[in-house]
Image (cartoon, rainbow, N blue to C red):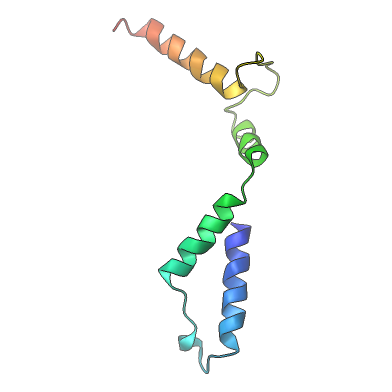
Length: 88
């Protein structure tokens, strides 16, 4: 979100030099989509992992096997527990 805010502020400042009134400062949907796209592309894998860990989706104390991530283990465990509850 910080990247979108920075782009918005820079855009408004750039338009202030040309605009005579506040009504002349505009933001298009295309501008917003471009800023969101740039922001999403700047999100790292580590940031996503930290968010999942903070939300409780990844148990930081578990040790995954070499071929499985923590998320794989949690999903696999959930699938197994759901299958044991449902005979279908």
